[in-house]
Image 1 (cartoon, one colour):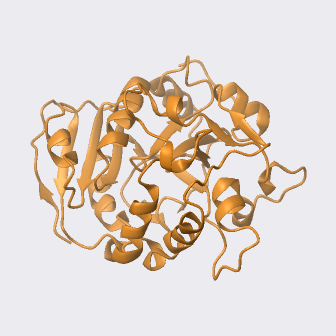
Image 2: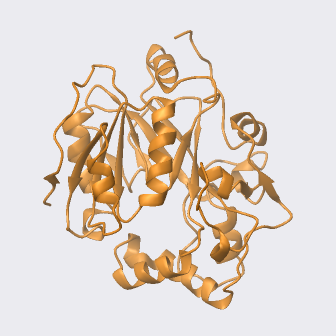
Length: 310
């Protein structure tokens, strides 16, 4: 593994700084929205690995005052989808800090984050001896065909893709055992998997993106699993923005590159469906327009927990 540091620290790091870690490749439009969202929550510094971007992502990140940028041309697949790059950076930068590990197309939400800063949220977790927050990846989409869904001129991702599937997840059913198999569903299951013979099940949607890092911690299976007996009662949601114009071309490239998990087998499933229907629209009668974290709590996508005063 060869990581080259492209930027030097531009500020002294405080003992309570909140850090975010990302691997990116050609993510510029999404990345600009993601940085703004997570800065507003309270992230102090972003530690980013750029894997050979050619769309201006590298230059944009290098110009940001709060980004510590690394780059590599090594294989994303051979790095276990970036986790072998992120682990040493977590050990170098995040020990003793709360760390948010996410992708460029994800927006992190926790209960009440519209009013409660991330620093207040993790202070409550610290008071209770909690060391991680698990949650759910919620796919977002527009009411237009994917091929006509654009970010042009929009101030935020939710203006472009405000809808999510309101049903079809086993974990929303009374009595669900909440095994990993229950954290599947949404439009990728409904549109790209249901009724089709697939070698593997649809994508697993459970993640543990927020952790108090220390030596010896290690993610398993990307950020889907981590050894911890002290996860919060609260859960989070990662709003996931994948379905924009250019999606079919993007998945075709990834099928050719074979750098994603299991030689990008999931991307082959996406490609099959979008090639069948170039006007594919994910909207259906069960689609729900996002209105805030209270809605996600009410619908069972997010769980609140006890909070001490920060």
